Length: 115
Image 1 (tube, rainbow, N blue to C red):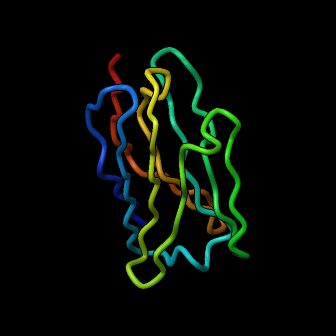
Image 2 (image 1 turned 45 degrees about the horizontal axis):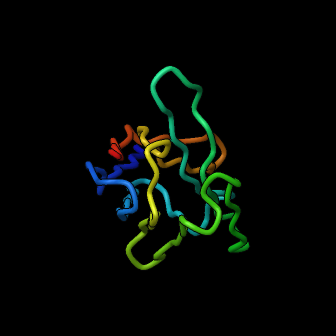
Image 3 (image 1 turned 90 degrees about the vertical axis):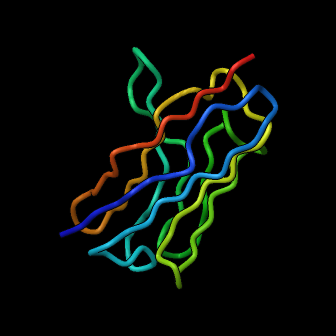
């Protein structure tokens, strides 16, 4: 059974930082075609934030480029998202996803950024 569990969310003031973690069981992240962070703000569709593919190539959407950093610790089988210079528009539920044949999702962690 595959499980992805996110943690590290919380409330922070604009300009602050948070580091999200996603720990997997039942799959090995470094063997996945892609692992990624998505987010969904209230009333909006889920959107991609950042990803790492099996070759180690990272991608960042324009709205987080230069502020967020994705990383993968293979030994811990954990995906991270370091979020700096947070903005109120970054408020959302953040989800971890892994493509290993099907796409698996975590349940999300809430990030709230206040002005």
